[in-house]
Amino acid sequence: MPGVPFHLTSRIQGHEPVFVGLESSIVGMFERAERFSDARIIAHSVMPNHLHLIVSQGQRPLAHLMQPLLRRIAWLIARSRKWEGHVFERRYRDSACMDADYLRHAIAYVHLNAVRAKLCPAADDYLWSSHGRLCAVAASDRTTGECKTSRMLRLFASNPGQSLAGCLANYRLFLQWRLDCDRARAEHGDCETRLVLPDCPVFREGDSHWALTFGRDTMIHRPTEEARGDLSDIAKRLLSQHSPELSLERLRSGESGRMVVHARRRFIARAIDSGYRTGAVARYLNISDSAVSRSAPPSS
Image 1 (cartoon, rainbow, N blue to C red):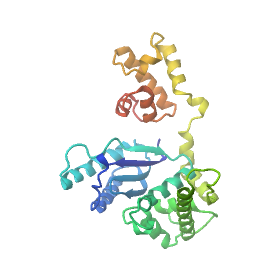
Image 2 (cartoon, helix red, strand yellow; image 1 turned 60 degrees about the vertical axis):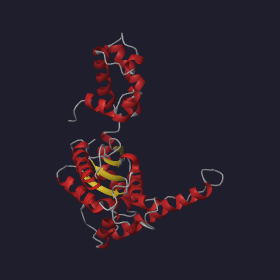
Image 3 (cartoon, one colour; image 1 turned 90 degrees about the vertical axis):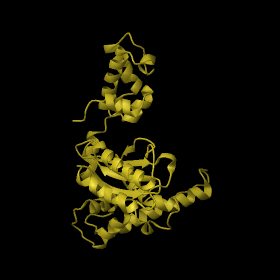
Image 4 (cartoon, rainbow, N blue to C red; image 1 turned 135 degrees about the horizontal axis):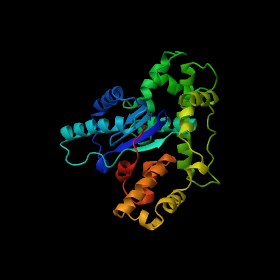
């Protein structure tokens, strides 16, 4: 999905806090990996046992950035911790940020992760996230800055032409709103009659900035519900057209017969072309994500 921002997460096997003491090296690996990729890292956070990245995908698949990055991190852990076996518990998780609110919430989630885990009292106190870099760029108060950090800050603009310092103030206001919502939920739980959340800040100019920066790409990759169709509907149509002798149950059985494999590959190609993610297709077919990836058509 070229041009679309993604929130990526990767967690250590067994949730062991093996990143403690290696955070600086891992952040350096982020920077080096980005130089050899056409993807752009918008935000990051290194936690004791997992990583968060918000990445704007380039023309190449996300794996072009993530596979060598996670491999180098795995080598670092294996050498420094005398680790044996798998370092990461599974393939990295990815979630597309398809609107301005989703991307703002993802950025706030990544930068507040250490606060919520009680590793520090405030985002300013955590050294291993991109929060500090964002604040440093805003400190110069450049109104025409074009670096990726300044573009991220403009997601929090409330007025046209607002300075980066003003965007930073809005960004901090948004983080505080997220923390206030956390406190309200902790005090009242999910009881709707007692839970009253504060009003979310509105960033109309930030919405306009997102539309110019990411909006076109997300619309290209967001099929309508009618065009996409339900996975079962897609499967039934394909079977009736190409393999009427096969049942839906056999398609989803994991059977390895030649006829079933060909039908499954055809279904995977159609489902991905319709906008479904690899994980959703894998769950529907009761097979692994890697099996879907191997059968998927190559990215153009």
